[in-house]
Amino acid sequence: QVQLVESGGGLVQAGGSLRLNCAASRITFSNYNMGWFRQAPGKEREFVAAISSSGGTTKYADPVKGRFTIIRDNAKNTVYLQMNSLKPEDTAVYYCASRRAFVVSRSSDQYDYWGQGTQVTVSS
Image 1 (tube, rainbow, N blue to C red):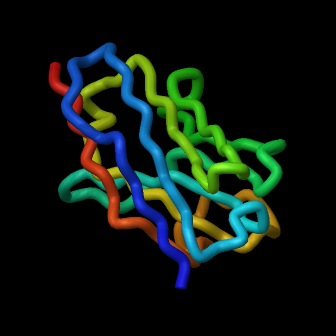
Image 2: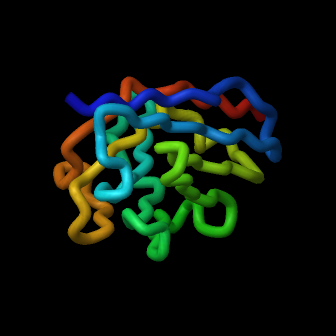
């Protein structure tokens, strides 16, 4: 049983920063690609960022390019999402997810395990 636990969400003003953390257990972390997704009220879950098992390949959704950075530390079994220059439209529940390493995917249905999510709220 794979466990993913997110933390680091909160309330910030527009233009501020947050760092989200996802800690993995019961997993050979270095064998998994990792992703971040988000879901706002009334909207479908959408891709945010992903990183390969080695950390050598990253992908970002267009709305967050240049503002968000995905980082992994395989020694700590942790993946991070550094969010800068936050906008009110970034408000959502953010989820981390894992996928057995193959390709770095933007599709949520290609991820096998999900955390419970952490709320990010950006005020104007």
